Length: 219
Image (cartoon, rainbow, N blue to C red; front, side, top):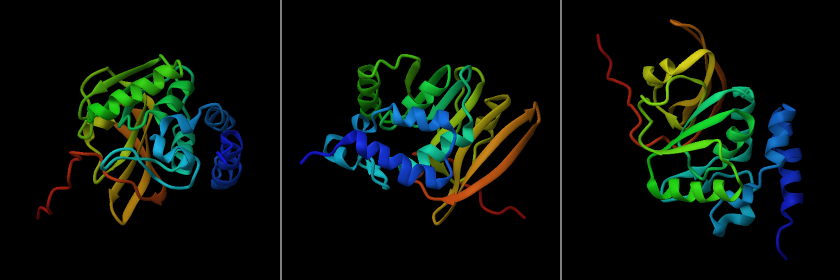
């Protein structure tokens, strides 16, 4: 018997996402209206709503639904926000960002993943996205400044260049640290030279390829 995707999506929201204190109705409505099962590899389609990281290539994963929802809620994406995503992956999180904001520039280092994501996004008529093949792990020089920056893999340290890409009042979210100690971190730009850093919760996520490594201790 095949999975009832609508029921599975409802259960995912009610049994995983809401209990994780994701209560922003815009986030919940967007997740409810976006068919997650269409963004996972066919072999994992019936696991699309499970509380697991889903493999999408040799060493890339699709985040758990709870992680995606919590990151989205923390970013508080507004309808006129210009968004940068580092790590397109399956394209699902890209789709959620695009539905919540004005436009998304999404950077992916793996050309095969990028092509697959483009096919999926086009199939769902999501057109306010620019997909870019490139390496954004150490910063991104194109596209001007952004109101929202979402980093979908972990980073041992956050490159200064990514913070500098935020507009004033812009928000950046990243999973910072190395296993087993990583923290979801929200950075908000207050002015040209001031940011706030809020540690939200501990979690774990595979690192972005080519992520900047901490320097050794200097005495």
